[in-house]
Length: 136
Image (tube, rainbow, N blue to C red; front, top):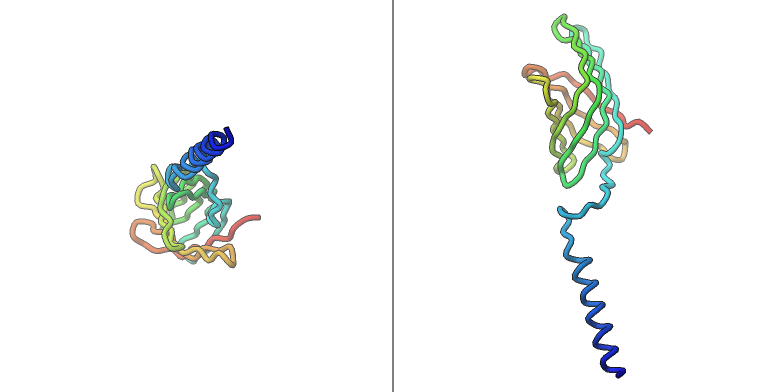
């Protein structure tokens, strides 16, 4: 009887082990603790072009989802947009596409020790310098 109990416990342990390890990293519904997650803000008053960006980002498995507000003065025309965005995050480099806003993209590099992103906003192929600071 003691041997049957040991075998039974072994199979239970083995079953639990397989259930716990069968969840791959990409399949797991775990919460991401990425340094990119959170609210970010940046502005760059330029002589001709002005940019203000407030964005909330969420990264999981190298994919970024976000939303926010973009205020842009570009070549004398003022743009105010509420947006959603998608992008990628690989080796601290991020690329964002603003959904529904033509020809505007963001590219940057996360500096996690400073909670900053150095980068630029691409507006119709023009690079506008735009760093972001994480809001606490």
